[in-house]
Structure formats: C-alpha cells, structure tokens
Length: 87
Image (cartoon, rainbow, N blue to C red; front, side, top):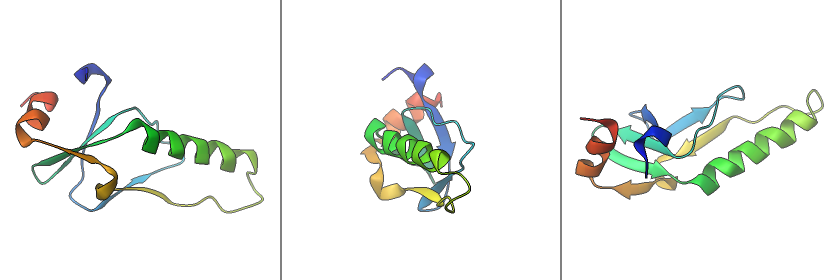
C-alpha cells in the first residue's frame, strides 16, 4: 500500500460520517485512539455508488446519512498504522 494514496482520519467514535460533498479517497486509514483499521475499496465504492444514485433523484427523496462503521475496517497492527501515518 502506497502511503501517498492513503486518506488518514482520527475519529474516536465507532462511526465516521461521510457527507455528500466529501471527497472519498481510497483506502482510508482510520486511527481510533491508537488502534488502526483500513477501510477497503469495496466499502468506499458502495458509498460512491449510493451518492451517485441519490444525486440522480435529487429533490425527490431525502438523502441518507452515510456512515462508515469501525467494524467495516480491516484491522492492522499499530506499528504498521503508525508507520503509514509517518509517526
């Protein structure tokens, strides 16, 4: 994994809200209180597809609040996570 292609977030909760105008970069390295997980590309692609679908029917339905859950991430070692964020 090339760390130049990583989007790193520090979110202490169990979910990370994706806003409709948020740029999704794949993959996401999630740091939650010193633990690290990588959110895989298929999870992010599902979000992109959902946002595209809701954009097509804009104004006809209420767009959902989209969350990525901690459990959707793939656990990686703390040592690897710190190396990827440059600590």
